[in-house]
Length: 155
Picture 1 (cartoon, rainbow, N blue to C red):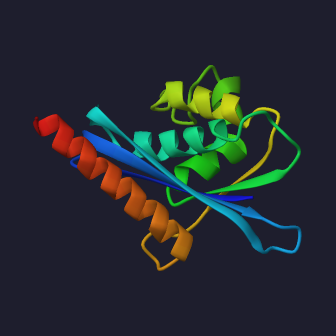
Picture 2 (cartoon, one colour; picture 1 turned 180 degrees about the vertical axis):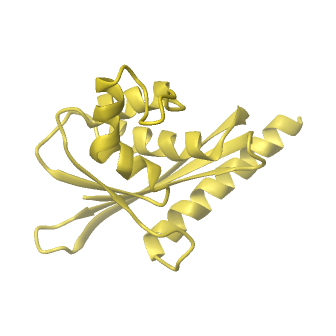
């Protein structure tokens, strides 16, 4: 399974949205099922919070953990870096980064760690706005959701 996630924010902070494109593949790599999902936050948020929320929701929507490999593609390199090693170091250091400061968005790091628990998850970086079809679609979903949040906040 491949999941492409993205976040968007109108202003930073500002109303935000996230987009998720889930691709279920057969054993030989053929597309079996495609699912799109988007969501938004009207209250001021940040782009990275929306990026992280997308990854959390993507894993949470899968239901019970299985051994199936799930690759989460993010164009925010912070997420793969943290989930592939930094997070464990932060926790071992009492939630402190190497510079001694606390990482931002601890609530979402804990949520993402919990959503990934018991799963065979690989977090991978994909260059954003580079023509990668599935990442571009996740970006469009996130932007549309952020625009909806902006409209709602204007009411």
